Image (cartoon, rainbow over all chains, first blue to last red; front, side, top):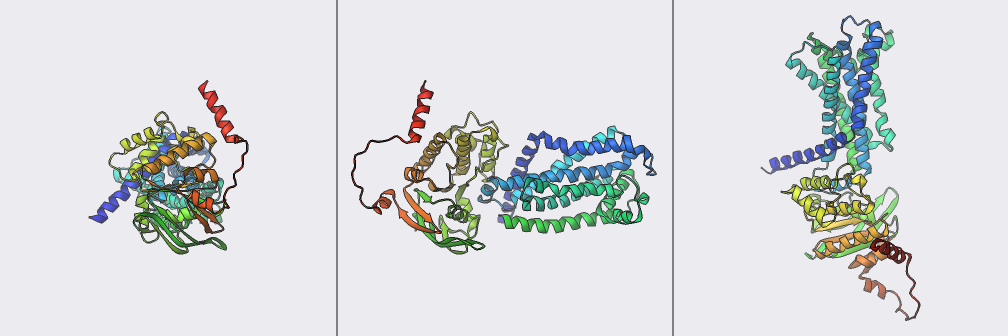
Length: 257
Length: 253
């Protein structure tokens, strides 16, 4: 009974923390706009400018492109997770939380949950824009759920990387800088062009980095194709990165509090 | 034993090679205002962090409300509040939202009512629904202290509560602190301003180079000096008195 009560309290504390940082997000519309505008701009650029010259073997380039765009959106979204965490550590409010009778990790989990929710919002916005641009999917409910699951795991994996950066950065710029290489990864993957068109060295990298398997798995799910091994490789990457990053983030957190 | 809110014995703390606390001893009586006076870097904040469970001591013992700070840190956190050196308020939320957030984290029955009461008590009702980023330094500090009072902790720590405030805001904060003590809350405050300790504290401890070198009431400390010689001199107003007098006149007009 006591432990149930304790878990209930902890869940409620995390809810309060989530409410707090969601308010932060809703009150700084510029962050929402930056996070969704860039991927949407990429989508416009690739569908209406470069798309005509890219041979993907499909007739609908928006369908081909969307998974990669979603990953880029998440990668740029987590830069703000890192930024918010860093700003919190700088202000006195974290000390107040830590001197209160709440779980020590509650403020950190608040940021992690916020990252999940805010990235889910930008993913939905981008899918709506993609629908306007001609994206169509024959996927059923189960496939969509699988896509949501993969994206959530991807977000969590990157969020814990963001937590390491936010906790150990010494400047605001440093807190967000780690996201650039991650935003760049989809470009060297199957997200925009088939890897077959790349020179062998680049192709070897592209085919063996996490983004390709995640993109391929999502693309197959959305187009109703068999997913094959891709989905397991994608899940393994997400869970693996998440666990490693979690361990290091927690270590960095304990050092700070 | 039960009359002591804080008991500290032989407290030690080092950061790498820097020996900050070299055996600190003091006690704080329940319901009193205790001032820890010392220059910058004397270790005041380190003591506050240890007593509020944010830092672990390297040696010595510390009890807060009867709970040992390392082994009973949950109980300690349950019974105290910290107002840190930098205003621990959320700038993006409104004053009311800040108070409600803390009330929810303390699992109080009626967060809205608690927030309302504290807003009234601290004269923040008019600003309640404005974002804290628009508050003046004094208002921010008042909100900060109000947040520390959510859930009526028995003991509150104020780390340099008037640092960076203008003279008027300082006097506002002083008034608040005195009211706290009148209501039975124990207050431990740190300060580098002598007049602040003199104005507020029942007991003053002077922290110097990692040790308490003097501890007592203002009268006790005065006795450490040779008896005052009576001299008649014209009283010069301090700049602070002049400043407040001029501002006061302006406001009356």
